[in-house]
Amino acid sequence: MRLRKLLNNIDNKFSYEDNLEDNLEDNLEIKEIKTDSREVKNGDLFVCIAGTQIDGHDFIEQAIANGAVSIVTEKKITVSNSEITVIEVEDTKKALAIMCRNFYDDPCKSMKIIGVTGTNGKTSTTYFVKHILENAGYKVGLIGTNQYIVGDRIIDSSTTLTTPDQLELMSLFSKMRDSNCTHVVMEVSSHSLIQSRVYGIEFEVGVLTNITIDHLDFHHTLANYIEAKSLLFKQSKYKILNKDDKFYNQMCDLLREYTTDIFTYGIFDGNVRGKNWSLDNKSVSYDLFFDVSEHRLEDKDNELANMSDTKYSVKVPIPGMFTIYNSLTAISVCLKLGISIDKIIESLATVQSVKGRIEVLDLNRDFSVIIDYSHTPDSLQNVLKTVREFTKNRIIAVFGCGGNRDRTKRPIMGKIGVQLADFSVITSDNPRFESPDEIIRQIVAGIDGQKNKYVVIENRRDAIKYAINIARKHDIVVLCGKGHETYQILGDKKIDFDERVIVSEILQELNI
Image (cartoon, rainbow, N blue to C red; front, side, top):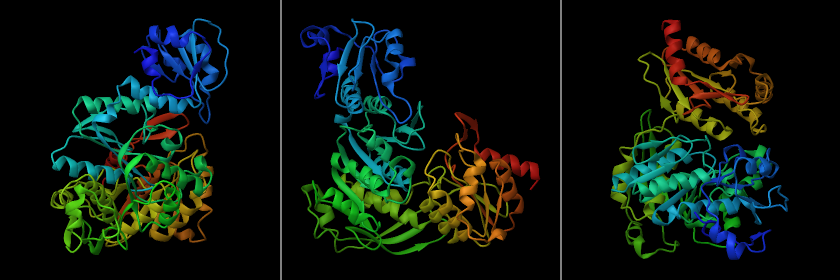
């Protein structure tokens, strides 16, 4: 692609070459865009990204040596080769997002993009929405924590990011466009919003599931975290919030400068409400009501306007209070997309649980093992309370906290785990570059006495084995924190660690 076309719609750019506008932009052909100097090849453009640990500006000469013909920077630089075209922009992260969109011929314009942000519930909500849309006859792409999907085809990812970087994101969108997807449902992390990974994307719907304490290692304060989440709605046509969330009013204050048109849902309040709910160990059921009297409706909302005096019965074959909220979120999104309420309810009745989200293993034993991705205080509390709703005996919780992540949540999770489970095995999660023993020490610091209610076993496999070995009839062992992950991160290495496989091996070892 010609450099001129690649730079289209980027404001405040200039080159150190006086004749750039006249000649170089027209003549210079760019093969690929790269942000890692080690991956640069002849004919590539290298974008300097200043990250939290590494600054791409420090690797410009390496990129040139590997064949870069153009450099995009946000700093005044001098390069060794005068034939290299240097472009200076105000913000290289935002410029990268625009260039990637140009490179792939703006794949978003032919699809409706639904962005889901929040501390918990993002993954399940995206799968619910995908299932409903597909039942309504649409082809849907999905981008999130578990995997990237086009229809039924799983796309290999080069990263493990919930929301991929600008390069991979637009590549995924182009694959989805070329596969005739009409909609894309994606998780939008707070990191991605701050780092401009989704900059310039026009979301058809932006939705917030909830806000609890998380990622304070990156955002430093809860106020910063909430503000980061709010950025999604500046790019969203329709804005949907959980009105039961304790930070609802704070989020509305942040949105008030550019909109008051917010669609809401909840159990206790909202335009879409779930009431008279009942729970068992396999499903949730509730009555669905609508109150849209104060919401600005459009022509496509005629059905919604007529539903205010009607009660609908909803059943979702996944246990837990969080399922009610996730399904209400999906209902709200799909209504704003114009899907009929009958099709939505019909689809929710056949939705399947998401891998690693209260995933009950098929063991054929007199006790149960559940795998869940609960890695925050709120999600740990939710999963243990949910399991309590249907357990017939004890809950044995196995949990830890990730290294090089928010440390403030560690004592909170220790307190929650020991309070809500009958017995806890505190162990390692993804320690990364931190000492597992130090992480565990910080978890245990939140536990006030109650030493008879927990044990510390640093090796996670040994911890799981211990929990299974002490399980009795009708006990439920809950493995928290790993969920869909099939690895453990030690330092900069990933080792195979699929808890489904490990549980199977342990059962054979113990001969139970």
